Image (cartoon, rainbow, N blue to C red; front, side, top):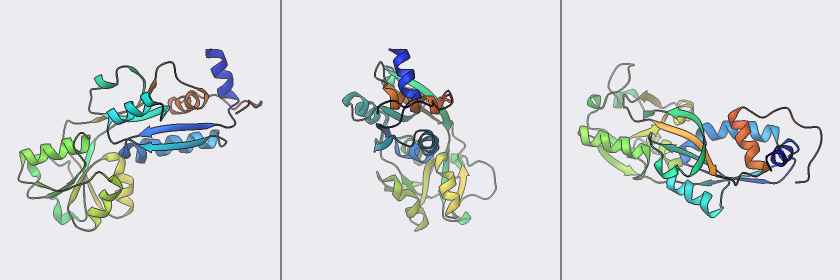
Length: 227
């Protein structure tokens, strides 16, 4: 069976790959992984579905709605212990503001004790971003002004002057591109980002994606396999 999977991946010319990803991890690292995968396997159609929390990714895999998941967990992944896993990167958290006037002066990392009276834009409960935002509220006089599930609205809300946003540092390139101020938060909380999949259920297309993500894909085969 293992040999058949390798042969199928080597000749992958078509088919479909379904991925469930948490929103911030679509920004990074999934975008880069998809670019590498599509470059190598242009005939494979890829579908990406949204999953707000690690448990949502797990459920999508269990139901068969996705073959690969991209998750970010806060250092513990007991709920995902029954899944195979490929670690990708560790992400920290940053505070994004429309201008410097909203943030304490200096270029160093921001400590929670540095923050005063800020209106925060936060993700929904159960996410790493919300966990850090709640910790800031508990330790300071900052408040949550907007709780938003649609993370594509985070940066527009910051640009509109609604408040500052706590986000994973995967958002930094986008924030920089639209001229926002980004400062790293000096908090211990981190996100461990990984690919996950159901054990014994890795077909040719998802196997090829894992190989690309892990840097283990070899040179393209000269022969073609049926899609």
